[in-house]
Length: 358
Image 1 (cartoon, rainbow, N blue to C red):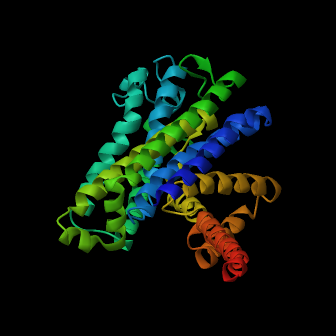
Image 2 (cartoon, rainbow, N blue to C red; image 1 turned 120 degrees about the vertical axis):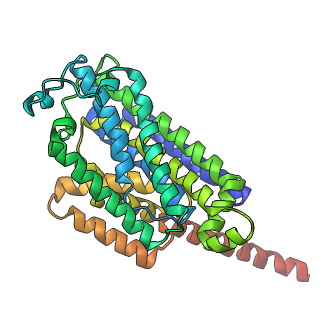
């Protein structure tokens, strides 16, 4: 990426942030709450773009890391609602004593697990797969299997995870009532803050030497290995980074939506996450942000008017992008903006040529 393109991309991003900051002046509390959820998805999309767009690792199970971060936040909120006692769904399941697994979530310090748990899982999976040079479609299938395993696990342990219903019934967060409008605005602005932090982190990675190595791994991993680098180490690092970003996105998602269930960890949501990045334009970061907010905004609007067929619209959009816009919306804009600039330069050159001949 050239310096000129770098600054243009950052300018677009901060224009988006400015628009998001001004959104509460024009939108209702309900719409702001919905937009906050889309921002959480945008953070998640940045992590996927980092691993897929720049490193070429297609993960179809990133919903697991999103879900783990969301469950960590949900467990803390549930313990706060229960005032450190046994949560209601556990009583309904026949438990009489708080499980040891839930004990740490009585303290706000447990929120560190939002980062720690996805990081540990990603480190284990990354080490076992990338060290053994598992890549391409094989890694994608493995990530799907991981998603399926966690969904079955969380549904089966109903007494500890809430089963199919998941965790809900959150009342407060750090003592602030979640139903209050002021709290919803605070959560919205907190989501924007984390979006900026995650974007700057990803931009820092891809703009330096590490980013060049990640792109080299994407374009030719064997050449990188023959050049004396260890691709596995870089892939493990970026996989952990992407998992942590997904966990943070999940934690931001929960207090705004008010529920987290195993469905969010499934294969279908994980594939949808990849679609956001593909439509926006992978390997750009800004495309991931635009794709996540735009697709989910359209999904919300279409589902309100056509609740039974919105998924067909999403599938059709993905097919159009794959066939006609392989570089996504950002790639399309770049393509036509380059053509416009070229024609303008050509016209200016044509205007100067008569004076030169004289």
